[in-house]
Image (cartoon, rainbow, N blue to C red; front, side):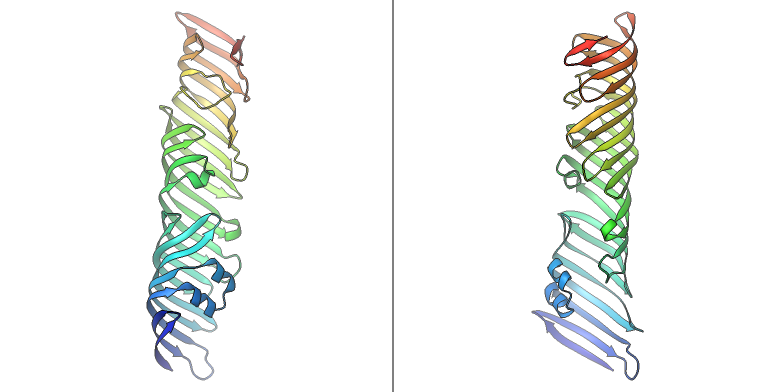
Length: 331
């Protein structure tokens, strides 16, 4: 049996066609289209109480076909949405458009474009067990020129673009991405531009294949960042890195240009430990100037230890070891 329906839901007009199976079959199908639909009356009519509180806003340019066969729903359609108001943590879904397919409890998203916290996002993939409390995601996500401030709890600025894969249940989502950043500042460090591969899971961000241009030089390496407490560790290789105004408040204010391999640890308050081997030129501290320098360093947040050092000062060689701290040099 088939019928054409022209009706209203709330204040919105809906045009549709419904087909119902007769006899023993429970198969049915319907097609609806509407230029404007408020979400609240839809969720109320399906008695989805939790979603009613989570989602607000409107659907526009809706065209959806649904079929029920052997107890499962199948369908496809396209729509636009505006002022949705759905939030995950501090991220609010505002508006967007895209195509959708439904196969039982699996929803497939295609060519979805959305705005979240005034940032643009591209989305595609599947959501499994969509009617459960904790749906499972397998999504590809594209970001373009997102502000970094929300990712650093307001400690940093700059912009990030990238392509990511997000998988797993919403309660414990995991992801990986290839990213590009530019005009970044974090704890006083300025980064002109950079690229990296990033993996996220269990409140931990792993960074690999990093290449960054900062302090007049190039830094490559890998790192680990814990989201909950803001602690991090990084293994870095630096080339021609300027020490000028390097923002390590309690570390001796050295000047010059260095290269080397170092390990850095820190937290939201700044860098707390530095260890490694370095080489440099025109390295100075207070009135002492080294034309060239090779050595190892270890800094614990208060004292810079130099286990060994070889270099030149003026026209002569220099070899030694010692400590720098509290404005003094100890040899």
